[in-house]
Image 1 (spheres, one colour):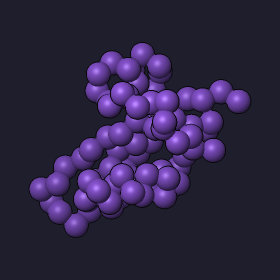
Image 2: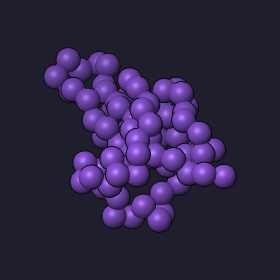
Image 3: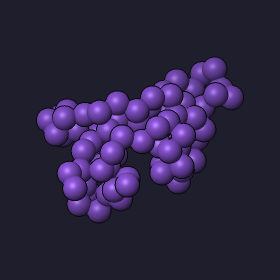
Image 4: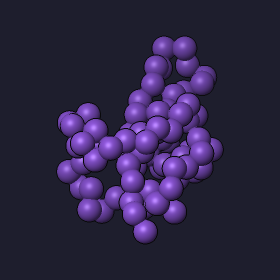
Length: 80
């Protein structure tokens, strides 16, 4: 099965000053926002986020344009 890239945008709904933070994940299909929250739960807890606002598909080029930390891409978990 093909692996695709997705941008997941997170926020902290309890803080007006928090803003948003996006991470790139790999998946066999696009997760819903609630699935992205569960899949990225450790990452978003570490960031202080608590809500996924959106999930958007990315091209390979967009995922590797320097906006995301892809240094350890080979060890990324795959959303299934």
